[in-house]
Every structure is written in structure tokens, then in C-alpha cells.
Image (tube, rainbow, N blue to C red):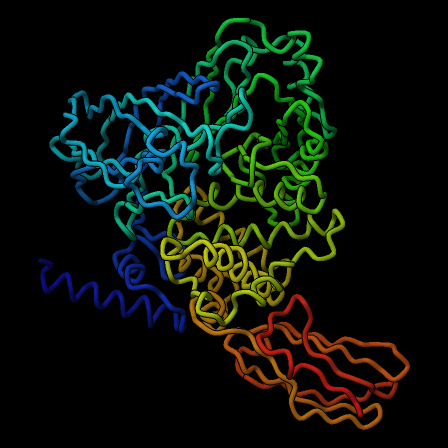
Amino acid sequence: MASKHLLCTIACLLEFCYVGAQQSDLFIPTNVQRAIALGTRGADGKPGPKYFQNRTDYDIKASFDPRTGVLTGSETVVLSNNSPDTLKALVVRLYQNIYNPEVMRQTPVEPADIGVAGVEVQQVSINGFDIPADKLRYVETNMIVPIPSKLNPKSSLTMDVSWKVNLPNNTLLRMGRYDSTSYFVAYWYPQIAVYDDIMGWSVDPYTGLYEFYNEYGNFDVRITLPKDYVAWATGELQNSQALFTDEINKRIDLAKKSDDVVRVITPGDYHSKKVLKASTENTWHFKANNVSDFAFGVSDHYIWDATSVEVDPKTKRRAMAGHVYKIDSKEGEGVAAIARRTIERLSTDLLGVPYPYPHNTIWEGDGGMEFPMMCNDGPADQLNFKVFVTSHEVSHSYFPFMVGTNEVLYGWIDEGLVTFIPKEIEKEYGNDNAHYYINAYSQRTMGSVNDIPLSVPTTHLNGSSYFMQNYGRAAIGFYFLHDMLGKEMFRKVFQEFIARWEGKHPTPTDLALTLNSVTAQDWSWYWNSWFYQTGYADLALDNVVVNGNQLSLDVRMKGQYPVPIKLLITFVDGSTEQIYHSALVWKNSREWSLKQSFAKPIRSVVLGDRDIPDAFTENNSYHVK
């Protein structure tokens, strides 16, 4: 039980942080208030003086047969406990146990994989002491491992694990088999969960719906494959010279320097056996520093396009953009160039933060899923979708990888941002309806019982609400925020957010407080409405009076979500004029008035458009009789 002195201290700190320092009506969850009071987080949105973050460094050796989907491995993981707490047990993720018959799932899987795919842990030891199998506790997709003698603060332990995993051969859940000899491999190694100052251990199981929350660390990975197989992975290949032929290595080096797309591996290279030096099995050695996950793809016939772009004018550092796709794919053309353009624009004008990794390689698989330095994207025959999925997944390199947001609880931060931010790239490639998600959310979800506030953890959502809230409502919230702040201030806010939280784990509150501190304004009136409360957007025309070319009217904010005002004035001769104000007009009022003279007689006035949500549009137009 805490002492009275400690409780009083916490209470005083809470009052100071919440009332004195912020002077804001921003909703702050109580566990975040406690973190601010204890000094792990700041009331200004910065990490606090007592912020801590654990670290997990992996040394992995694995053997994988893509023809069967069977992987065997051993790993040594060093966990650094930087927290002030003594840890009695480890929470270890075994994601592929989602195929166990008895676990909870929110995403359909193929019946043939149930009870077949999954993880068999063969041996676990901590600091050299074997943990008996009967001491390991399995809870859904988590394994709980007791720590002999516990783990004290500011100390570390070494966990050794040997395991075998049967990967799913039928289900395509963010990864899987894409033909008889090609496989994208993810969530394949026992992974120590995050322990943070907000929730302690992250214990929510993997259900297939929501995404991930991983700790940062270094990865040293060796993967042994059958002969003739090529691997692409998170990190940088350490033994390229020993594996690839001299010609392939020359093309890789060229791609690292070229603004143009280089055909690194072609169909002819496979046909003439000029891809790899050895015809026996090979071990592929990759290293990645300070990343939160590791994924790889393997094939004996995927072709490889690559290019690169300068991402940091100060250091002249370049990053590669690659696309790996089926030898007979008709949709593979152009993806590497789109990825390159995305990296370039994120590094320059969209965020203005240099791309954080040495490469991003897109594997042609299914759907769209991000990993550090890797994406698994399905083929697209339509340019608009090809640009969307490429730019979206590449943009995830910033959120949740450069900045380690918690996708398990707050999936809307990264998905909302990377749904909105790359839309300028889609427009550049000719999409005149890039913000289609606005109308989709407005028509399908807004104001309904499924319009769940984003303060509700992602784990509480179902399939339909998950996608509409994370990719719809959240993206709209950031879209209108950008509209109010302007491009330069929006970039300034997120540049500061990235600088504060690169390689760390922010909460939504840290983002909102950063917004307030950078702009020196209180945005709680907007943030609470769009992200945390129930309601809908609804603007209405009222008191419209037209007298020839004279117009007076009121616009009332009848809903709870602030949105811009856009008026289309149509004149008798058929010409039009627009009046636009951002949602900032609603900061201190729920009514906006207009009195204006025009050069021509007025025929009609229409409020809103397809990119402004409105629950009741019947009160949005006026026609002169």
C-alpha cells in the first residue's frame, strides 16, 4: 500500500500537470495522468525526465523450407530492463498460435490451417537456467515465462529459445504462401512483448484483426534456405558478395546510386542460372539496428526492380526502393518508381524528415501490410490503387516504425496519418478523388452506433468499426487539422513529434500535447470532438435571404464534429463563386454569418461538398424561387 506522503505527492503533481501546466480541456486518460505525475511523460508532450523504455536485441539462426512452410530456429534475446520495476515473468509473443483451435480469432482463417499451423517451443532458458516445460504458461497467443530470481531494475537477462513453427500454407493473413515456391514470412520468432509506463506488460493476444506493438532492438539474423532461393528482408544483407553473382552485385550497387529503375534480377537471369553463385543451400545473413520487427520474403523465381533516392541533403544519404514480384506479373511495372517517389516526398515536403532506413522493399503478395524496410502488397491492375497501397505502406516507415506508436491500443494514430499524408502522391498520379474515405465514413458510419470514439482501445473494435474508425474518422480528423494549421505548421508539429518520440512509444495524449505546445494554442475543442467523443458532423444553412445580388445567411453547427464551411454560389448566368473557411471558425462559436454583395444576381446557394462530412444534407441548399 502506498504511503500517505506518496499519495499526496502524486495528487499534487496531477493537479499541477493537468490544471496548472496545460490549462486545457483536453481529455487525458487517468493512466496517462499518473505517468505525467510520476515524470515518465511530460505535460508538454515530451518524454518525461523519468521516461523509460526496455530493449530487446535478437540473435537468430533459422532454417526455412518454403516448399513446406516449416521453419526451425534458435534465438538468443537480451532484454534490458530499463524500468524502475522488478519483473517476475516475461510475456513472449507466439503470433502463429492464432491457428490453435482454442484461441480467440477476429479474422477468418482457412480450416486447413487450424491445428496444423502454430509454434512448438522446444526449449527455453534464462541466463543459462532451463525453464521446465510445465512452468511455461500459454494464454491465447502469449507464452508466460517465469524469471528465475526475477529481473531487477536497470539490469538485463538473456533468454535462449529453440522452436519450430509450421507457417500457414493456406491462409493469407498479412503474410503467407503466394505460390508453390514463394513465401512471405512474418511473426515467425518468439518475441518479448513491450513493458511500458502506461500499461505495464502488453498482454493483449493477437486475434488477426488489430496490429502490433513491438519493442526496439538490434537484429542479427541468419536464414538458411534450399538451393536456388533468394531472400529479401528487414535490414541489410551482410554477405551479398558471397551469395549473388558478380553481375547481380553490380546491379545492386548501381541501384543504390541510380534515380532510374534498375532490373536487378530478370527472368533471363533465372533461366541462365546467373542469380546465385552456389547451387547448394545458402545462409542469408541480415542485420538491422534499432527496429521493432523482422520479416522476410523468399522465392526461386521472383524478379527484382530497384532504384534509390537522396533522402538527406546534409549527409547525401540515399535509400533504396525496390519491388520484388512474380516472374509473370503484369502489375509489377512501376511499383519501384512509386515507392521511390513516396520516399522522396516524405523526406522533403510531406513530412520533411529524412527517410529513416537504408531501403524499403515491396514484396508482391496480398493486401497491404507494413514491416520495417519491407511491405507485403497485393498486385494492382489499376494505377490509383497501385499508388495508394504503395504510398500508404511505405509511409508506415514513419508511423509505427520510426515512431513506435501502439497499434494494439491506438491503431488510429498510424493508420489515420498514413491514410491522409500520402494523398498528395495519389493526386500527383492523377487521382481526382484521393480523399474518398471521407464520403465513405460519412455515409456508412458517422453518427451511428458503430461510430466509436477513438479513445476506445483498438482491441474493443470489430471488423467494420476497426476499418472505418482507424482509416476513416482518424484520417478525416488529421485532414481537417492540416487544413486549419496549414502545410508548414502541420509539418512543424509532426517534425517535432518525430524528434521527441523517434525510437520511443508515444500515446495519443503525447501527440495532442505536442500539437498544443508547438502551436502555443489549445486544440482540445477540436481534438476531443473528432477523436474522443460521440456525435457527427452537421452544418445547416439558416436565415438565407437573397435580394438580387445581395446575400445574407447563417451557417449553424448543429453536429458535434467541427468541419469546414464551403459555399458554392451559383449565379443566374450559370457562373459560380466559392467561399471557404476552415473548421477553425467553430473554435468559439456554433454560428457563422455572411453578408455580401456580388456582381451578379444569385440563383442558388449550396453548402458543403463530397470532402466535408454532413449527416443531414437536406438543410444544405437554397434555391431562389
